[in-house]
Image (tube, rainbow, N blue to C red):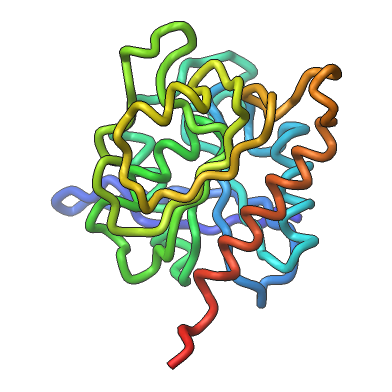
Length: 231
């Protein structure tokens, strides 16, 4: 189900631009909220995003998806564009959180999760963001392990879960263990999974098993963030 809202953006003297954002939701609105962002190449209604959102929602989490501005433009005119620069993506994430205006866990697939983790570690909306869950975190570009995207993960102040295939070309298990990341980051490693969590036949695992395990890990993480601490 989709719905749209309008929020103020690009504030200037005597000028306010109203941006209308379309969201796709899965699950019960009364359940804990997970805002789920897409990766660099496919939009929020790709097969992967649709499937994962439904799996997570079936486990008692309300999932809302949205498209970044460059992907919205692609949908309008059909022209492929590279992702916007990180500052613009961060601004869009912040606008979405403010627009929905309720406690949430934020996260996403690949780039969407990376940007969400940067937002979660910033000072904005700290009262609303309860944590961050990433699927296939892009620790580095494929084939370039020295170009790490991890500076903000060295010392975290919000809970983070990263669900990662052990042979992900953007960060294998052997790569990541050497990065010196904050030990409080929770990892769910999926044996032999690639960037889309898909294992090879010889591994003895199936893609279905890994997708469901990922959904279960995220749903558990989200619901734990909304569970009152025992006195």
